[in-house]
Image (cartoon, rainbow, N blue to C red; front, side, top):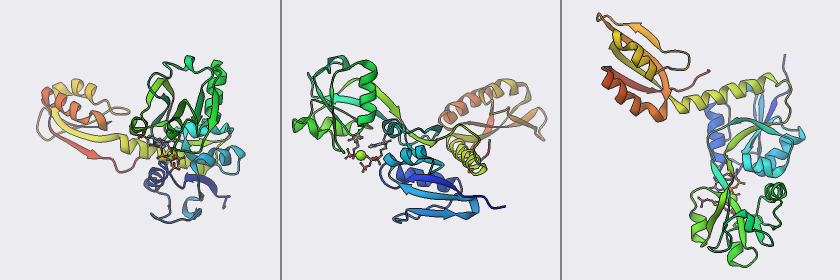
Length: 286
Ligand SMILES: Nc1ncnc2c1ncn2[C@@H]1O[C@H](COP(=O)(O)OP(=O)(O)OP(=O)(O)O)[C@@H](O)[C@H]1O
Ligand SMILES: O=P(O)(O)OC[C@H]1O[C@H](OP(=O)(O)OP(=O)(O)O)[C@H](O)[C@@H]1O
Ligand SMILES: [Mg+2]
């Protein structure tokens, strides 16, 4: 039985576009080639259809129910006010959303009363000010908002900060705490039962996240130290322990977080483990 293809929206431009396509490809889906400008791409083998859209618009399409799921930034989702919610954090496109101003303008959001705040995330900012009762005016701009202060259109800006280079170059400094920590997220509309192709997408993307975040670790150790070693490498369920031909020794295999691999190898070595090997996980279903 053939069912209607599931519609997936992927950013067509900007910071999230490349990593999103790369992640979908790693999850085994067909994607447009680099430089290709297709706006729609069918992947009949997986019963899905990809729509390449502006990340800012993706929440609107998903919220309308015309597209089943999509990738966008958490900040863009909140800014849109669309009735869509996060299904999965995707581990790329990380940024903070922050206020900045010339030194001496304001020490904190509480000092913003009567000031003009420029942003291309007006929805997000109006909600933020509304919730805190801040009486500042929001100036809606499309981009390059850092320049608004220099040109006298605004006193403060609220914008995406990744490295902080753009702010510094514009002679601005951060004011107050981050408004939001953002990253790329998979979003959908309903809470109801999900179509099988969406469940499959979620399993595959989770698999990619685990393959990126974990490595496989193998080592040999004397049997009497295996409990201590297992405490260092508990794996997801529990480590695999196999007998070795050499009496009194066992081989252990477990997944460990990629970021901790070197420290764990040092600790295992101290315990007497030898032949410690680390290998990449190409793909997985957990
Ligand atoms: N350095 C960055 N600059 C802008 N957005 C970033 C950055 N790093 C991550 N992001 C995220 O990317 C999303 C914005 O993507 P969008 O395509 O709208 O803008 P962009 O990457 O600035 O591209 P452009 O301005 O060229 O259209 C947001 O979710 C934002 O948090
Ligand atoms: O902290 P940084 O590493 O400097 O990155 C953040 C800057 O990058 C983005 O600008 P972009 O180049 O997308 O231009 P835009 O403002 O016109 O969207 C964003 O709007 C900030 O200006
Ligand atoms: Mg931008």
